[in-house]
Amino acid sequence: MILTKAGSILGPIATVLGYIMDILFRFTGQFGVFNVGLCIILFTIVMKMLMIPLTIKQQKTTKLMSVMNPEIQAIQNKYKGKTDNESMQRQNIEIQAVYEKYGTSMTSGCLPLLIQMPILFALYRVIYNIPAYVPSVRVYFDNVVTPLMSQAGYIEKLQGITDITKAAAVNSLDKFDFTSADKLVDLLYKFSTTQWAELEAAFPAISGVIAENAGVIEKMNTFLGLNMAEAPGWIPSIAWIIPILAAVTQWISTKLMQGNQPKADPDNTAAQSMQMMTTTMPLFSAFICVTMPAGLGIYWIATSVVMIIQQLFVNAYMEKVDIDEMVRKNLEKVNKKRAKEGLPPAKISQNATASLKTIREEQEKEKLAEEQKKERIAKQIEESNKIYNNDPKPGSLASKAAMVQKYNEAHDKRSKK
Image 1 (cartoon, helix red, strand yellow):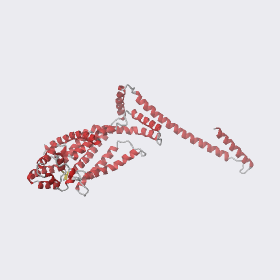
Image 2 (cartoon, rainbow, N blue to C red):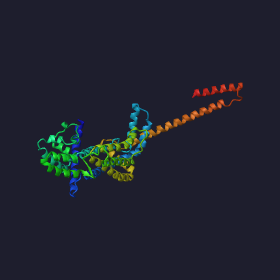
Image 3 (cartoon, helix red, strand yellow):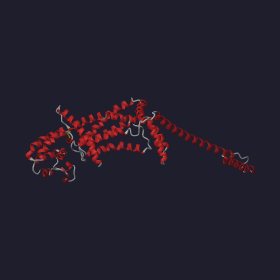
Image 4 (cartoon, rainbow, N blue to C red):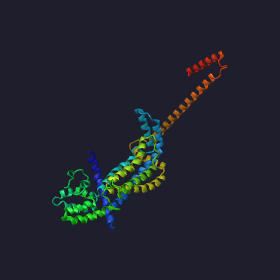
């Protein structure tokens, strides 16, 4: 059920993105260049440019968090170790007051990500299977599939091609639908040069059509000497440059993005997890790029490179952003919303100020109580020293009597307190 809903959401988005990529194919075709790798890079640039407003919005939220974070950490430290419901509720209320003070919410930073996630997943779907979404590319595969399906015994002949299960991405050919034109297009997109030659030899009646279109497809899929439809694999080769570059560029991109983020609390487990992801995600990217088609790796690299360049400009822009002005605009938006609900706008800042004032007052009380306790202990030690260190003559009866008397007096004073 969940997968079906996800598919229904991503399908239309992927279709729209496929048309955008088709426009790029037609554009480069005007200059005699019809290449999957180049169009993936141009496609990445266009998509990242379209998402710049979301990126800036997310960066503004991050910068605002850098100002809010000390106040939030102070509240968290105040309730550290307290797990009862009352303490947890008070903590949440006081943290919410800080967010209200700055005219933002706990979910504001998630909104840009929620918008981008379906687009990113749809992008992967398009890049992973370009012919299914880009008409300008599919036409060459249809030129082969249509006559192929009219050949007698074509299913058995296709099943005899080397590594056909790998190209079909199935464990058993019984699971693959050879009667579907869409499935056959997907299959042929994963074909290597050797498999195209085997296909041509298996169907001599249409070998000319296969050879003509296979030549165009191979030229279209080859970028920097690599087949965009083939995975680099675990055998060392020049194709390993893709997963290596994917890991390096993503690491650089992540470090640049962290430049605008608030300093992480070392005791915060969530912050520790994010720090760990900074190291593990580039390695994960390398692993994915080894096992997935090279075209997806090119997209991954292009995305990171564009993000690096974009982040440099965004960082420069964010340096000029006035936090006070940002908060003022945020409060204006919140107050308009509150006005529609019939709520007074002043309550937002007043509640936050009162809450933060309470936090500071309680912290000052705790500090004062600790200082008074230390002073009281020091005074008691001083009194004890006076009692026991002022004997007239050590060992004399008078000194012993005075010691008992002074001890009793001191004890009476303590009991009256």
